[in-house]
Image 1 (cartoon, rainbow, N blue to C red):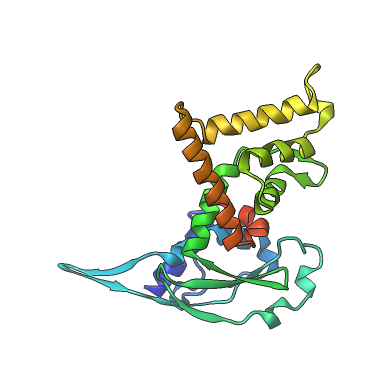
Image 2: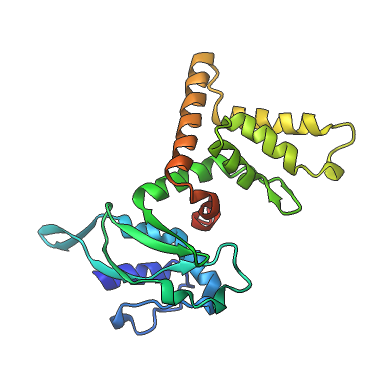
Length: 236
């Protein structure tokens, strides 16, 4: 069963005609030379938090296959990361494929987090909320700024306005549209997309729920500030 899980992970990051090398060894080894495959693999790790059953008709038994994992990735430190002997700091861990498991991940050679089913639930929540926040000005990304503002206790709608205001390229604004007006329109679109329910009481309840859920997610897992993009599935 462990080999089947590993093969499924491999199939999620390779073309259909590229088979897992030496499949009976049941192993995947990706180094810095396979950086893109490592980044493609990260969002697929939620499979390790699945319920697994072994079926032998007419019986079905829940099992917890064991897999040895050593994971590290570069998020910001792309240029020099491969020369930092990171593997010397990465300790292999044996985990079971189970909803209660946690997978250790070393980031940029200095931050270690535990990926879990709850962690990926928060990724999905924040990915759904931020997938339209695409403004960018120089190195400033609206999505990243929005996350920081929410973590600093700004409400989600105000955070959209402020992150838009800071990342709108004024040279590309339509003639006659001010920076304030463009940022306000972004905040209004966010309200209509994620909060507006037609009825004021329902909309306010949705607003409070969104504010609480996004703030709690970032307070519980602050590393989402740097990992959200890396852990999003391509279709989000």
